[in-house]
Image 1 (cartoon, rainbow, N blue to C red):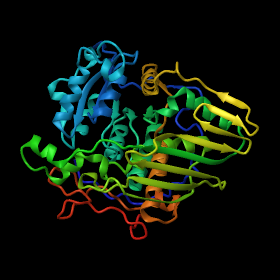
Image 2 (cartoon, helix red, strand yellow; image 1 turned 90 degrees about the vertical axis):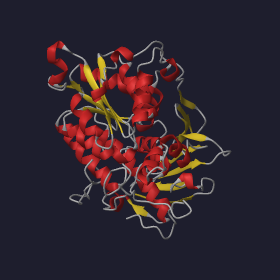
Image 3 (cartoon, rainbow, N blue to C red; image 1 turned 90 degrees about the horizontal axis):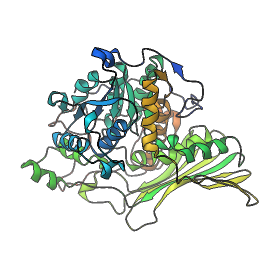
Image 4 (cartoon, rainbow, N blue to C red; image 1 turned 45 degrees about the vertical axis):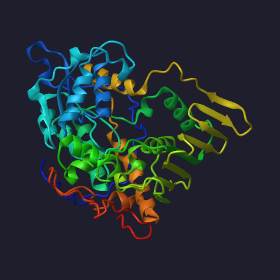
Length: 459
């Protein structure tokens, strides 16, 4: 992989450039006969060819969902930084029974057509896998998303990409530029903010945007739970039979390093922040807040915080109050709540008037799995030669909302959206190789420095 170049600020991206359709185009689908690459029809093969970039747990699940669609879909290439992850993913996808992974009975192994020469390992694997496909699935750690997305669009591929779409403002701007190219090329792009593909959320948000509870005055969004996995350096050193390089370790334990993950306010809480923006049909103008680390303080927890509380302000003066916390034994809550001038939305699918009258109560028990729906709809559009989905712009702005919150909690100061999105501060490594130095390094005790509000510079 070539070294990253510093992105110059050539234009001021503006939060007012808001696509009101959020993730899903509301107009009629546009038929483009050439949408599906001509490669897919060589020698009478009408299969939609897929390349998987990032073969961890989320990549395995996304590939499974793509292969479970009703269209003729084949996985033809795989790429990952680590061979063991690629092999594990391949074994899962070619198993006789996938029910433990997908809930679906049977197997998708007949759709996995990845010869050994199409399995690519290393930082540059994506460059070799993308040309082989019509659709690219991007499920690496988010720090790599901008360069992978840019390359997929440059090569004219449809994309399913997980969220978040970057870990810093230069990365967001790179994604926004590629999103414009995707529109010009009529390439379908679906982002894994799956609530946009979840019936209960679609109907709930539509009712609120239509004024069912009046103007939205305050929003409360939460991702509070015990946290996620942590991977000790010693575990992988023992498996490798040697000490890991610093780059190897951070890649293995990627959730705890900002250049890879963006902090959990980006990696997970983006879902709730995105819903807040979706309901408001807007993005914040500024943010301020606080955060720190009280529980996750060991050397295996890298540099990220374990709690954030952010107050976002929209242009109309309304506020979104955001909580995200990774602390075992504390209250678990992952949801969104809205207060309107004429009523309340106490939880997804429910709307109540100020007098207590029930306006909406949606039962979602029979609804399809949104993780599957987003793939079903993407591959249906591609198979029919239709251009329907352009999620990348909203995905980038949702990512920037998360990064804005991180900037606010790390600095302890008010951060303006315009200053944040046009920041030249990159947190990415100068180059990608196993012996290269990541942007943050441990001290002699193995501890990593973390942000100190009032001292840390974020712009």
